[in-house]
Image (cartoon, rainbow, N blue to C red; front, side, top):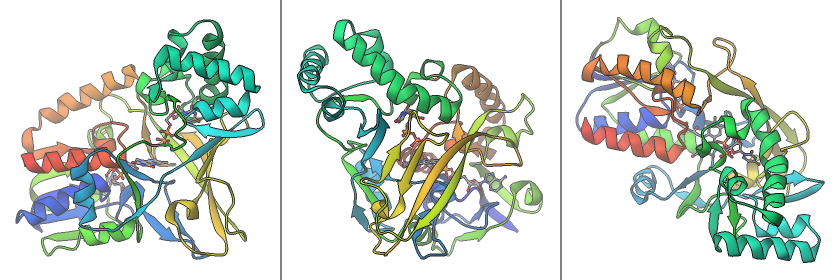
Length: 369
Ligand code: FAD
Ligand code: UDP
């Protein structure tokens, strides 16, 4: 076989690049070792007929108009604003932690005092990462910062990463900052929604092009030498490509437990977080996200795990300086290969990308190519 581009991985990164390059007249072979396209965004109907996300709940959100419009060529959007409640001291309160959370957790007069001080100190409608709040607080605010750190972040982060918040890059807990506001949405992006007929259908539409051939159940290692290609785009783990020559990059994995219930709705909002109780981090009611009509519902419970090669999947690169350093060694080796081999995506560039960031970086890479 002879192609212009051999693309490894049919997730957002590989598929967007396949679509762009095919449209520009290039012959593309897209392969994935899994038995399906769509990477970690893959969705399917389970045995009870509920549309589920096999690799954990995915909600689309972006501030990038060009990303939203690009994907709108392949799907209609269902408007959806994700909301999350965390169980704290027996109450379910909004996350990101905000003025409503304070009101639900503390006696009225004290809640009012804390809220006034927060607004005075940081302003209204302002997002304050927990590590910053801890650094810049005194008096009552110091108590509040400590309370939020202990009850919202510490336990959850230990479960998810086996690390404390301050041991990770500040951007990790900064994804869910304390929000001096009454806005209960998980994201404030300008564009938010779910693909009306699911992610897999979006990918099918995106990859429908005569210049794209797709091979599933195919590991790059097994066919590398059989396909003649001018360029390789690799969206799998970068350390795996180099046979871990500098040592393994660490990742976090998750086991997704799916449970069907004969009940139309299982929880008040899409996701409930459990920072303190149980070993799992969160439960998500799939139908709240997809808007599907069905008499039952499927709940996904996330059990974080260590990644072990060959045993489970590498879902999260771990944002920690020591691992970035190791990544940079692989990056240097990658740069040494010139433009014949290009690494991209969440695993290829060891970056904690959201879907829109994966799409945006694939679009800008396709422009360069
Ligand atoms: P992937 O989707 O991981 O695709 C890489 C593909 O490469 C995989 O299909 C893999 O099988 C294939 N591959 C790897 N090695 C080989 C090989 N040797 N041969 C052949 N194929 C190979 N983002 C959001 O914006 N919103 C969310 O709500 C959200 N929720 C998430 C929840 C969870 C639990 C996780 C893990 C991620 C979530 N994300 C979310 C992030 C999102 O999944 C990623 O941004 C996106 O999937 C990145 O796309 P990608 O193509 O770079 O990687
Ligand atoms: N986080 C937390 N408590 C929460 C929600 C988030 O401690 O209730 C921290 C935790 O470290 C988590 C990070 O913030 O890994 C990012 O959360 P997000 O929901 O963005 O994670 P993802 O959806 O990518 O798993």
